[in-house]
Length: 336
Ligand code: AQP
Image (cartoon, rainbow, N blue to C red; front, top):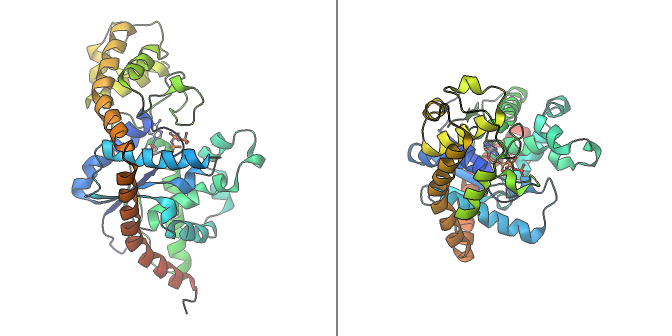
């Protein structure tokens, strides 16, 4: 197998306000990788329009995701930060991958089933081929590592299948075997209203999530209102089976404090939720408050954010364009 330069790629959709799920499951874990890897982080606006986005809201949300990344510790001097639509290699490679991926593979994608729901005939074709575009995002940079939340595991397996099929169809060793990096104590943060549903930007209930744009009071209020049960907390995570809401809050606590979930659980053993929620509210405000405040500061300076995205797009294009040209040669596209 060919050896590839270690390169990290990941993205976030500007499809609503960033949530603590996006932060703990993804963005927070990207910060440390900047020290050890070449890192490319993308605001995936092409993905966002797979469901309807108001154009003005989309522009703002794109800046907001960039601001959220920077406020969380992504340093534009160390990482490339850009928005997907400005580097045409993503869309061009996605088309080639539409012709590599099989219908049967896409039919198995659970995210499409969840998002399209009962009305799949009315879902956009883009939503259906979303995983092909995601494979293109990653492979346009021959990225080797992709830090994501657990919900993206299946899409990354598909990326590996696409890379393998492309390599074998054309008899090349061109695309790497991508490694998912799923780490932290909150790889899947659940809704604050329903412990069985993923916390999502697009959930219609505001109280289901903590947004990175919420101020300190609102963060504390949402934690205090989070659904729980009437049982006291047990001493270990195993004993929380079947208590999805309680488990979720412990995981959030652990991820925010950088501790193990089991350790947090045993600290609160035998207690009800009142004290625990008070402590979680304080911790959330302490950790997220400075990020939300820095985001608000950055959002007031659109010129700065746009300059970061513009420079990032130029730098991303410098990596992706030569890779795309090689793909065109492999596929047999004449470049006269
Ligand atoms: N609840 C979550 N827990 C842990 N990680 C999460 N991620 C998203 N939600 C959670 C991770 O955040 C990164 C960016 O996700 P995305 O914006 O590309 O899309 P998504 O996974 O579909 O996120 P949302 O918030 O649910 O958006 P909508 O509502 O628009 O679909 C990914 O690494 C993801 O794993």
